[in-house]
Length: 75
Image (tube, rainbow, N blue to C red; front, side, top):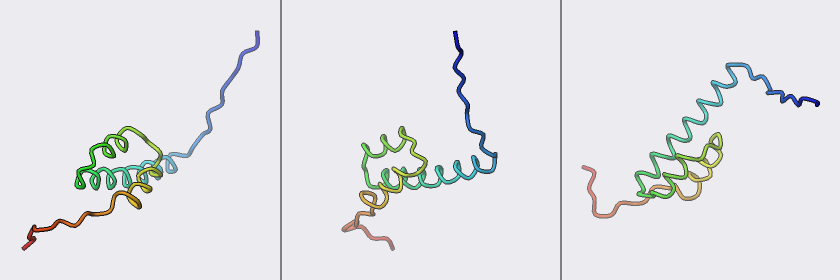
């Protein structure tokens, strides 16, 4: 029998830290925005699916815009 080996690519630690910081920034912003806009479905999808920020950026650019709040005073 021949054994099959899988080679896992080696990433330098600083690259992994950059990817993690990038992903956390966009995920945090998208989750905050979806919670503020009362979009429960998007919140759950964004929380469970990890796409290194791609889905989060798409959400923020399309459906995550702020909704105007009418009749609410900020002063």
